[in-house]
Length: 488
Image 1 (spheres, helix red, strand yellow):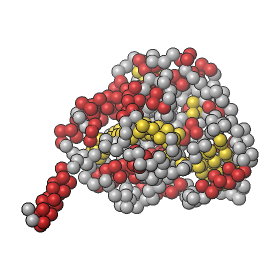
Image 2: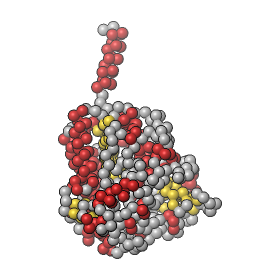
Image 3: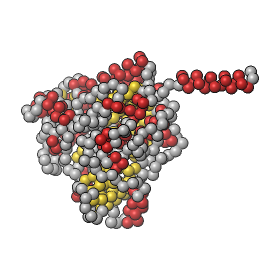
Image 4: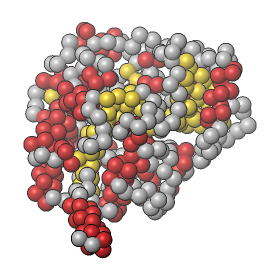
């Protein structure tokens, strides 16, 4: 064979191989209010066999952080790849396309490159016009309920179950939502609540993709363990409430600004939670019981989806990402739910299974962020990043996934505006610093500093006691641009 013929043969072989190479599918599992408190993260008493087997199949990130500990902005951070401080979107009711009209969301980017893109459940924030971003999906988005009761007594007689659902869709502020019971235990099947229905629909979509052979980007947004803590009785029965661990430190951090924390906000919109704390021992245990019963219910639904993925023999061609939108306070610091810059609200579970790239059963302790997922999935799928007009603030985690690097950054960055101040935070392996800068006054900037080696429960703000470390953390924060003002 002469050189020309050999060259042509090689080119034809490369071209044929490129045509036959299958684009990897993406299964994005988003979970509302899921903290890294289950078996794979060392809490062996939590019943989470499906989350655990998923973590065993890929890489678990032990120091992953959201970019803002509240539902809608955190989901914008994931789906746009941009931090809240880059977009100016910090609230529930401000649609990301109002801030960046030509934003290319993660599912939209995959759709633009030949993928069938679909979303079910809670992907963008439910309500406020965010629920169905039409440019992101190949077919209409399919929502489900977040506030979801099956017992009439759970609504307290003030609204029907359907009224609770529609109110949840329409109203924009947490305190304006009419709520029912904070928890519900009912002897019903899994599909009686939203996550069971989301799993069933997800399975149907996987079956359709298997039959069509189309590459897919499928986002399943599971709603539990978000309030209210509603789950079938059998998941409540997995736990002995008397043995459930409760918070060991329930006071605000010493020397911390009062506005930096919170108490019962959001939780006290449900009955019979009082408007002011502290909560009784009985109610504390019931709420913690409800959180983990809801977590185990959600775990079972994810298991159904994973079982079907395997039955259809799609697992070797599918990248799976498990992501919690933020952490959750369960009474530590006297705080419940999220909306702070503290560890329990900002540390999240993140697991990535990428066939051919990740190594099963591995973990990583370096700080990573929600915004890292957008560039990671693009690199794994071979998609360009330069087509997005919005800032892509994250770094690809592929070097960690394939074992060529231990870290992509030495810190994570997150924020939360509170009390008329912008709280920007830097979290390194050992420390967190929060800068509280007034947004509308010339009042002095305040700081928090915590040392997680000596004070993992954040008992004492060390900003005044460790000035050298504080200055070093300020230098890290200075690497980031100033926060954009909140859009209104």
